[in-house]
Image 1 (cartoon, helix red, strand yellow):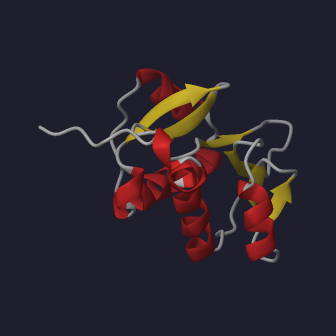
Image 2 (image 1 turned 30 degrees about the vertical axis):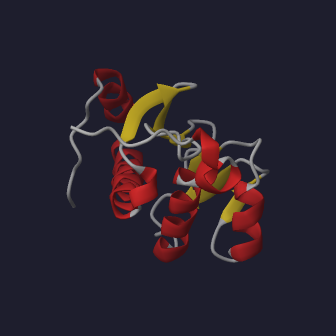
Length: 147
């Protein structure tokens, strides 16, 4: 598996603090987010940061809604991908993929450690989040930097 280098010591430390089995699952999600962003021209470059103490992926051009991933000790066999609860993203994913994911309210897709999430559906969910504002608020998108 390809590993995108960490640009933030804080994010790397967060990943290093996860238990090994959880870290492997979250690193796979992280790579998927970067892969989808690279394959989705409207998404542009991503910034990797921590939001609410969770690894978060934000489009630098404003095209998308933040995608976060995390594991919580109170649910040791699960990890999740979080979306902005003020969007219709999870509602849309629930209607399109009712049998592919477990959902937590209007904010997350929940996965079980050791089981592989539906990759095509998950790629769609990530791309949809990373381009959310292109559809919802197109005037918000910043032009690409020219260099």
